Amino acid sequence: MTRYLLAAEADKIQDFIFRAAHLREAVGGSQLLTRFGDRKDGAPPNLGVPDKDLIVSGGGSFRALFDTRDQAAQFGRQLAEVYYQATGGSLTVIAEPEEVKDEADFARASRVAQEKLREAKRRRPGRLTTVHLPYVAFCASCGVGLASRHEKRHPKAERSQYLCDDCLAKGAERAEESLGAFLKPFVQAVVGEKENPYDYVWPGRDRPGAKREIDPTTDLGRFDPRNYVAYLVADGNNMGKVFDHCDEKQMRRLSEAMEAELRASLVAATQELKKGQPEVAVNVIPVLPLILGGDDLFALLPAPWALDFARHFCTEFEERMTNLVNGLNLSDRGKLPERITVAAGVVVCKFNYPFYLAHSVGEERLRAAKQVAKRLAGEPGGKMHSVVDFEIILGSQVGAKSEQGDYRATLRPYWLSDEGVPSGWGIQLKALLDQRWELRNLPGKRLAQLRSLYRPSVLRLAKDDLKRWESQKETLLQRIGRDKDTLTQVKAAFTALGGKDWRTIERRGEDEWHGHGLPDLLEAWDFAYRLDKPRRGYEEV
Image (tube, rainbow, N blue to C red):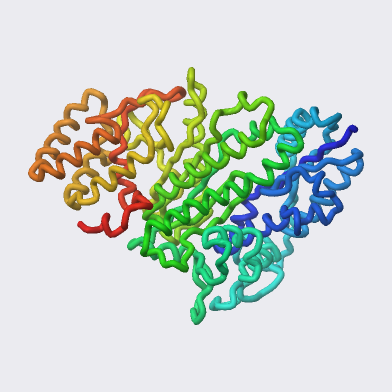
C-alpha cells in the first residue's frame, strides 16, 4: 500500500533555548521541547496521528506516515501552527510529502524527505518578527520579544521586570511540580527508582528559607575555589547515516531509544562522580542537563572533574549506542562504522560567564574535534574514533583560542582511545588525566616554571631556534633534578604526553606542526581530576 512520509523539523532550536538571560529559562525551553515531542502527552498525538504512524517525535524532529498526500500536508500545517502556539518558534515542513511504495521503499523515501527538508530550511527565511510599535517594552530576559506582563520572574526576585510570553512560558517550567519529562527522568535515574527525586537537590533548586533564588552556576561554582564551572557539549558521529539505513520499524525504534541511551550515559557519568567523591553530599545531584535530545547534549557540571566526566560519558555513550545500533539488525550494517562514536567539547569558565557564549565556544571545539575525527576515518584503513576537545576560558575571552605556528602548546583534540590512531594524530585523554594524578605532588614553583616554558612568547620560534628552547628546558630539568622523585615524575610526564621534546603532528588537511600534551595538562591543571581519585589527594601540596 502506498503511503506518504511527512518530515518536519524545528528551526533554530538553540536560539529558542538560549533566548533568555537566565539559565533557568534555558532549562525551561528544553522542557517545553521535550513535552511537545512526548508521544504520550505531546502535540502530535493530539492532532490525531496514531502512535504506529508517528515514526519520529523528539528533539525537534518529526516523521509521520499518512494514507493520503492531503492528510500529510494538513498535518504539517497543523503541526507548525501548534508548535508556534506552544513555543513561539517555527517549524520547517517539506512542501511535498514523499511517496512510500512499500516497506522496502521506506529507507529511500526517508533519505529523499531529509534532503527536501534541508532544501526547505535553506530557502526559508523563518517566521517574521512582529512589527514593533513605538510605545512598548521589550522583554528584559531575551531582549527580543515584546513584553506582555510586568512581574517578578521568580517569587524571590528583588523586583518586577517586563517579560514576554515565550520567556514566561519557559520560566513557568522551572516550577518543581513541572520537573516533568525533561529533568525528572534524569534525576530519578541518578538517585534510583525507589527514591523520591524531590528529596534531592539539583543545581538551582530553591532551598527552604533561602531569601533569593539560587542560580545553577552559583551552586556548581562552589565545587571550585575560584568559582569555575564546566559545560559539556556532545554530539554523536554518523547518526544521520545510521538513520538513512533504517526501515520504518528500525527508525522508530532508534528514535525512541536514542535519547534514553544519551540520558543513561549522562546518568552513568554522574553516578561515577558521586561514587568517587564523598564531598558531593548524598542528596546532591552535581550535574544539570540543559539540552538533552536525540544525540545532542549540553550539560552543566563541576569544573574540577570536567575532563574525566567527559571521558566517562563518551565511553558509556559509545558502548550503549553501538549495542543499540547492532540490535537493530540493519541489513547493510557493514556499510556503517564498527562502533558508534561521539565527539565532545568541554568548556571551563567562571560561574558568571554567559552560558550562551560558553555553548558557542563548546560548539567550536566540537566542530574542530569532529573534523579531525572525520579526516582520520578517511585515511587508508582509518575508522571513526570518539574524540574530546576542551577550552579553558580565562577572564572575558569570547571565542575559542586558535593555535598556530610550527610549535604549539597543545595536542588537542584527545582521543577516547588511541588504539588504531597513528602517532602523528595525537594521544588519548586518559594519558592526560593519569599524569595529573602522577604529578599531584609537584611543587607550585616547578609548576609555574613549566608553564613559563610553554608561554606563547617562547613558542614564537622557527625550527632553527629549537636549540635555544631545548637549552631552557634542560636548565629547568636540572633545577627539578635536585629532587630525584620529582624529576622522574616530570620526565615520565614528558614521555607519556607526547615524547621527550615534541611530537610531530601529521594530519591530513593540516600543515605539519609540532606539539605536546604537557602544556594542555598545565592549562587544565585544576580541572583534570579523576572521578575515582580523592580530591584531597590532589590538594596535599
